Length: 315
Image (cartoon, rainbow, N blue to C red; front, side):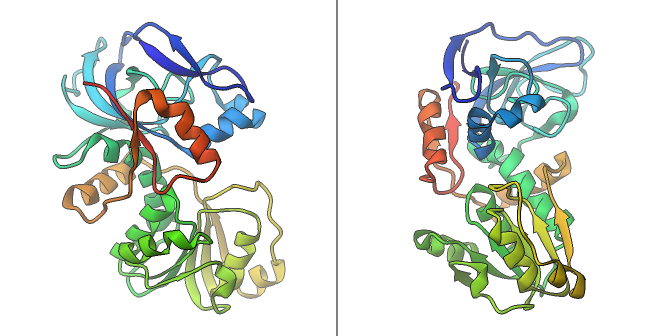
């Protein structure tokens, strides 16, 4: 099979011919139908700091994966051939990170990392749901504990931000979106946001219950601490910058809960799939083909993608 492989930081993806993997005991083989393109992959290509978290190179990237189970390893009894599944990137499988991932026609997975795709949910939606959906669901529901009637801000309307905004709206929150790209503001309104601003600095101080920061560009963390009320919550997800200067005075005096949020569970993915199946969650998912994956990652790097870019292929 053909696979787009990572060979080292600063190097372009290489199109390689590799064997189709065979499932070992306790594994399944998934024929991939869609793979989401994530900023993490751009980071892997550009930043040597990722190397310690990856399998040996060359490595087939792509950690947002959905497809069809086509072979079962010895001892696998609770998975059906032909099942439509998403693969959690946060479990034991770690496609595109700990072993070959979605930028190929097939990959291996462990059964506990498979999430059934409901009727009415397409493969592109399912792929995006495994990471962009899961991360947003975990940040909004688990770490942010967003509830009806709360005043909530979402910083950044990218692939994860659009899902987080919609999830907060569905929970009954009064949502403001902070997004510097004014061309994206109509999308925020369509998702149900009550207000859109270019920066959270435009929001009245101490007026919000919760802020979900999906940008993490340094200044946004401190803006979030300033914007929440006494006893409010800031959930940090984005890490475009790995350090931030914050007002410890505001953090202490207002007794703000500053929480990190990363990943999520298979239950988070299943919840996202359920909302997609009902039509309550319908994120913007522009699609490309397998051959366009390197160009797609370049578009992500340049900030040209609206929504979550997904490569769709397979029979």
